[in-house]
Length: 103
Image: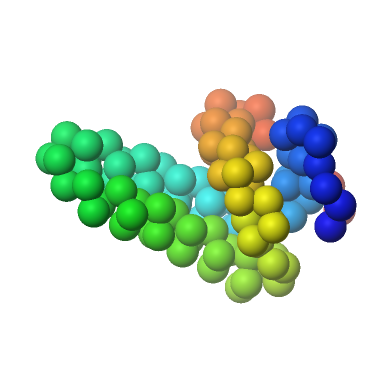
């Protein structure tokens, strides 16, 4: 993998690692569940649930990569950009603006 100077440079690579529709769906589910759990944690003051929110979000994503994409999650090399990519991709899925997967 090459280094990326910006998120805009990184995002096309990120999408290339998420071609399988089940992987994309698992990412969306994990991201939305993480958001719900994090909001619940803030509401309840249960700070340990923030860690649980992150763990379960990554668990969904990693199943998508290891079982469906058969690739190594980009988060291992680009944790911040990958985290940002999860949220951008989730937003694009929800709004119907996600580019079609390129083969």
